[in-house]
Length: 293
Image 1: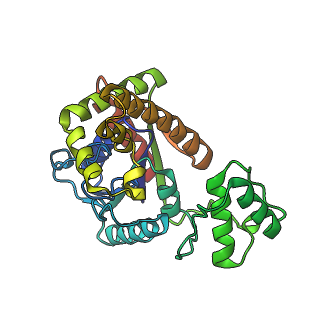
Image 2: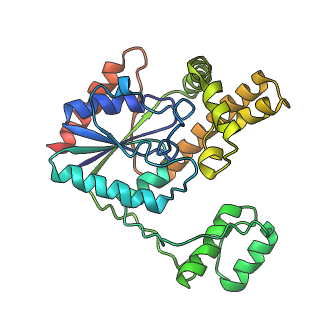
């Protein structure tokens, strides 16, 4: 059995996962696309050694920020780790908010291991017209550049039409999906306060090292919390304005996470009791026990 603990940022996933790992003879597998990279700890809210409390954690800090790491790479690594843990009579617990990572790992999804073209030299209209000339049945909005690029790459890699691509909801493992949630106002307040805590814990120093490195890979530009501070280091924006943008982008990301999970997976949602987190742990554990019986 594989346990998944997911939900929006700042809702208690790490704390719950460690408690459940102790109860279920489990080990934790990262399912956050930003936490696979080294030297990106504070802004990504990566679990600390103290927080791990002796529980084994996997697929954290496995790439340098100069390296690429795709969903296909994660699919291979996560499945290998799940199989290894199950073989050793451990309970794999996937923890994180990157829905595509979770779905690619657990469902019968097939990816092509090939180089992709970003088509940076083409406008959205040019991409759309190129795609229509190949695949007349395509149903992608002209403003959805990411999907247009994906569709063209799919054709280039497979010589098959993206509109014919089959999506699957076939799970490869027995899975229990747990989602943590809370009221929107509470979540947004926690997100805002966590950014303030990150600043106190050294976010500026961490971001400054990345800024000074000159590295601007996808690994650096994807997480919320680094690129927003670059204008401050440039001297073009005040710090308060940059921090407000981190908070705003984090709230927007949380909203997108809810939308994605509600459309892509059948999540069993639990309200987080921040006043007494043991209540949340107990409710989730009882639910899992019933499913395992």
